[in-house]
Each structure stands twice: as structure tokens, then as C-alpha cells.
Length: 425
Image 1 (cartoon, rainbow, N blue to C red):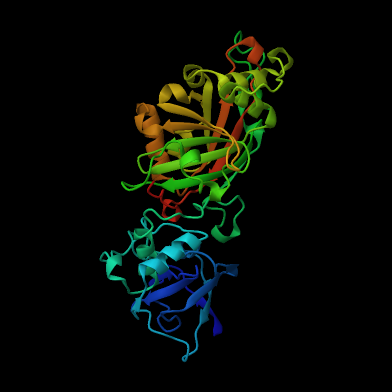
Image 2 (cartoon, rainbow, N blue to C red; image 1 turned 60 degrees about the vertical axis):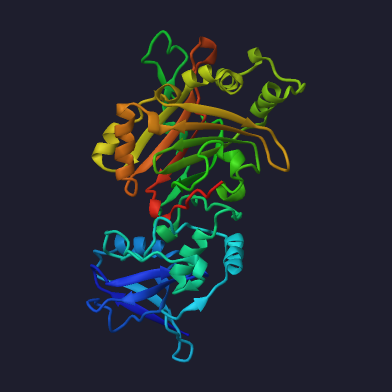
């Protein structure tokens, strides 16, 4: 094997990329019109882009890096090339049994679904993936590594996946901070102050988040996917298999095309009230008079009726980065989300080594005209916007004021092409 540095010019490179079974991106095809036709060969493994290590990345990550630098005077592509004795024809056919593929699915550590990327992508051409004829796994004839991945997905019905890949936490050097999540400062939110019920202009800066953000998942769905509600109970693989490792509040936004799931750790005191409400726990609880105003509001939300929850669960969406139209529409105006769209609330007690979980499933498919417009804009510009999904329980009584933010997850320029697909149930 030899390491070769290629200096690529700006613009389209005329390369078709794929991902091998081991996770390494490689060159599938060098088009005749490619400016690198004399330097790059089919089968070359890509290990770095401008000295950013990508040897374990999916080819979609590499494409994003190349596209983001497409106007640069030059880009350095570091490749690993097999010697003549080691090289083989990418089109070589191999026989792979269903049993072998099932083993691959069970052992997969990052099973990014190919259902949204049936062909390979062009690094500098934003068009659709190159169409490939459907393959039949029952014939057990696999043409190349891309077909192996596609066939693996076809055979995954009914097979257990160790986990659904979760979004990494910001910063992410590999993707230049795309397709990841973070927790922004609580100081960006203005919420109801002590005297808000008398003076609606009485807004104050929030104190620290009450629930710590644990992560976020962007998950696609299709006709074969399982139920989109109750995901914390039905899919132990969410949040890379760690959703129930600690008491967690799951907020699941359901769209036509998939789900955005945010996770927050529930502090011990609130878990005690949930246990008392749903399990009849006799554990001594503090009296409401001894609690802070924001604690009262959250506890009443957790143990109250669904109607009360709908009237107090408040979403504060912000768009700190993105096109002007999105920033104007997603501008931090609070919305009682349970009044704008159907909401389903579920509590799952601790069992079998899994911690307690409280889940809110919010079906955005049934929102009003303004909500649909905002969702449509965000979906259209999803790869270019940064969104803050802030949550607060509304204080509706003087004893519940001032408010304090429950939590917030910031998602950075999400790429649906890199998202996994919800498996069948």
C-alpha cells in the first residue's frame, strides 16, 4: 500500500464515491472528464481531505467536505492505494449468504441506512444519487460493497440492530460542525418574570437549564418503519442504545419524513414525583410550598393531566444561523406546542436495567398553517440552518413565576442523507 497526496482544482471532480464494509470511503469511478483522471484510480481509499482524517467516515461525509471547499484554489486529497499485486477489480462478484449478512447487521456499530442513498454521490454535483437497478438479496449475488450495504438493509427486517447511530456533539472536525448537536447558553432566552401576569412586558433572562441535554437523533421513516410514538419503549437502540441509561425526558417531533428526537436528563427530585404519580411510591416528597416556582410548574406538568400538559408545554424555537426567511419565521416566539398539534405523553418505569423515562410525542403533521409553513421552510433549508429547540413549562400562576428554561438542544445543519432509517417493529 502507498499513500499519495492529490492536489485537486476547484469545481467538480468527476469522481463517484462509495463506502466499503469496514467504513472506509473509496473511489468507485473516475469519469473520463475528471480533472484527476491521470492521478486518481478506481479503488483508491480516501484517508484525508485537507489533512482532516476521514478514513473511518462514510462517503457522504467526504462529499460534504469536498463540496464545502469546492471554490478553493486547491484541495488536498490523501489516498491509500493498493500495490499492483494487491489490487482487484471493484466489479468482481462475490457470494454472500443471508446468514453472513445477518451477522453483519447484528455486529454493525454505525448502521447508517442506505435506504436514502441507493446509489453513490457526486462530490461536487448536488443532483440526485445515481440510480442503480434494484438487487435481489435472495439470489445472494453481490456486485460490490455498495450492493452489500443495500442488501444488508433489505435483510435487516426482523433483525436486531445494536443501536441507531446518534448525532455527535458539537464541535465535529470531520464534518466541519455539520450534522451535530450542542446545548446553547441559557442566557439567549427571555421568559416570564415575577410580575408577568400583571405586566406582560416583564420578561427576564432565564437561569440555568433545569434538565441537562443528553443528545439528539435525526431518524428517517418509510412505509416499512415501525411506530413513531413511544420510541423510548419500543426502540432500545435510540441515542446509540443509551436512551434509558439514566432517567430521561424524550421529546419526539414527528414529521412526514422522519423524526427529530431530543433527550434530557431528569433530575432525581422530579423522578421521585413521577414514581409517586405512576407507581404509587410511598417515598417522602417535599411539599410544594417548599419548592421553587419553576419546580412547582415542572412537577405539575409531569404529574398532571394531559390537558394541563398541553396548556403548559411551551416551545421556544430560534434560528441563530440560516437564510433570512427562516430566521424571520423561527424567531424565538413562544408557542404552547400541545395546543398547536396532537401530543401524546407516556411514562415508562425502570425495569430490566433500564431507567425511568417520560416521553412526549408531538405530531407536527397535524399542525396549523403557520406551523406547517415554518416546518416546510426548515425542511427545505435543513442542511444550512442551525436551530435551537428550547423547552419551558409555562408559569400560569404567581406561585409558578418566574419561569426557568427546562432545557434546549441546538441542532447544526442536519443532513438527512446521513440519517439512519427507523427499522421495522
